[in-house]
Length: 136
Length: 136
Length: 136
Length: 136
Image (cartoon, rainbow over all chains, first blue to last red; front, side, top):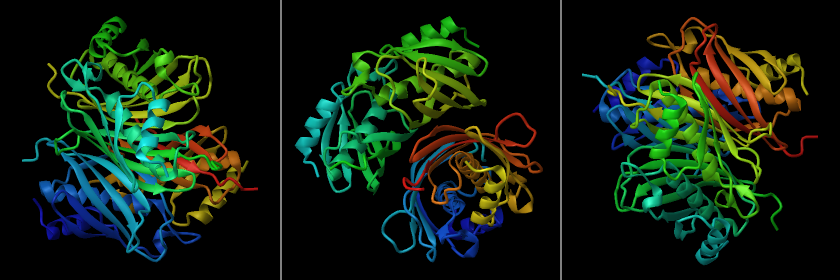
């Protein structure tokens, strides 16, 4: 298992461009938040799709790493999104992940995405990750 | 809104072949159960994929009808499944649905599928339904 | 690799309830057809969702077996569907599958579903299958 | 219908951060390409997931606009990805989209993603878009 600090520094190294921040991880779950500023907005004042997609991907990755430790070759094999409501332009995107399965070589989880502080989800994601079989 | 009895009799009429039974519905949620017998099994003693898929589809449909009333032209527009564990051959498949969005013309929900009485999910589904705009 | 006859008899044995018929398989592709009769219809005269889902599942399975031979423990790990048009009540459902990836332990493919003889697809599916690593 | 130039200038305005370029659009299809440079790479030299996701999203959007004209309120309602092979670090990501349905209020399409010039797909996506009913 990896601690919150270990995961945060791994994410900073592995995804240097990311503006996703780790809030908490552990217990087959994780919460992350993506900063929202001018670079994350589309004209009209809505958060861009790739911001929500990156948030979900990192939330799943972090929830898995918190269980299995830092395994860099863990890779996303599928991600599915439903976009449900227009996110707020002035709130962070928060992703709340729950792992549904953590097998030896495959993990599956779901992420509900919110505009921070608002009750109704803006999007929902499900993802699968391949974990290397021989990770010593 | 439709009562549990109204929904159960609508399902029996609309899906005469189904062996899915309504357990409860309401509050943006629903639980259903699919009987498992010889017709639902594959050689080797696992529940067939179509049984799990039908269970998820009905769970979503029922959760929506409990909110909007009996609207027959509500149709499934997408369904996504992750199959995670081999189901038990001698337990019903139970589907627990939570609606994520109930808009005027679109509903989105997720379903976690279990072998009845066992804690770990066997599959997970996400579905979207189109609701007719003029349903007066 | 498995021949068309080997696959057809394996499907008949493995899925004894199925009414899906193998039309052709090979070259990272397959075509199958599902009979449509009273058992496959919903009131109002449309083909039921589970019929389309079973057709897609078998199409993918058959396309994989045609490449790797009869490997019974190959299992569906995910299936995603978009339902696009109401199928015809008096035509078979035809599934045309194309494999996108055939790795050592994972296969990915897509299936376009038609009412036989009509040009516009009624549904589309994408699926992933896990192939046992040691299949001697 | 919108011309290639109209679409390109709309994309530049609507997605000012995007590095996706329109290659061609029309006939229920589109091809786009995403530049790949240091900002698109992860340590180890693979193209980041959000780059592939943005490419698929724009490919679908462009294929739809080429049919219905510039309709800014057309929004992504779902996107599903399968990631199949590690993309090349020194080639553009190319997305080839085919629309499966173009209804009055809903469009569905699929996108196969390649590292430019290589034959095997790196990823595959399916997406749905909501088109405003009154767009006169």
